[in-house]
Length: 206
Image 1: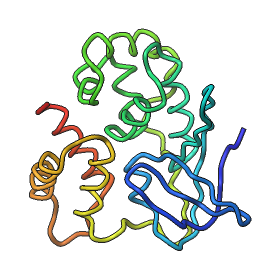
Image 2 (image 1 turned 135 degrees about the vertical axis):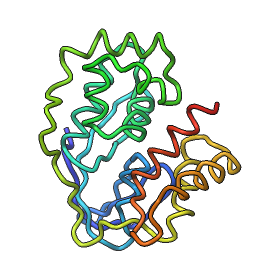
Image 3 (image 1 turned 90 degrees about the vertical axis):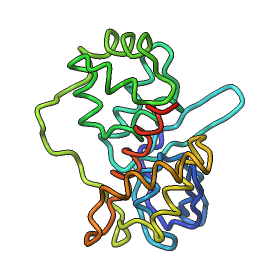
Image 4 (image 1 turned 60 degrees about the vertical axis):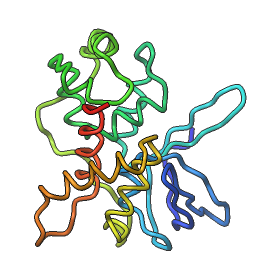
């Protein structure tokens, strides 16, 4: 198993990144929140999970080991594949996702595009006894050298991230306008947080 990779970010796309390790470029599928923390040309470390299918090998990248572990646990629930697990982590950070499952918060789970009430109930039944601690303990921070800030311009980055999740340009623009209005104009935008709020908003309007 490839547990993590560390190297230089050589390419970024709406749904993934390429990290060069020892002269080899590794393509990683990443959530928009993880991508928002990467910068071209900077060193980064990503926890990884290799998903093997009959016709493909896909390496998924995560901000930290905790997120990777939750991604793998989510897939043990019936009907949850790697794409849906990644979308769940794009909408909710790991601590909030654990809380939603452990407390049977179906309203939070159904904010994830692709999860209806029955699907949320099934996830809760299958995972609530295995989801781990929700006592508010600190999560492992993202490690990426000096390049941990979002790529400017942040509005364009949000638009590309939402497009990578299947939303139209108009849907993305409308959601970004709403979440941007709530952001402080004097602070550096928290792109992962804005992205999660955008996805939640779009999930309610579809």
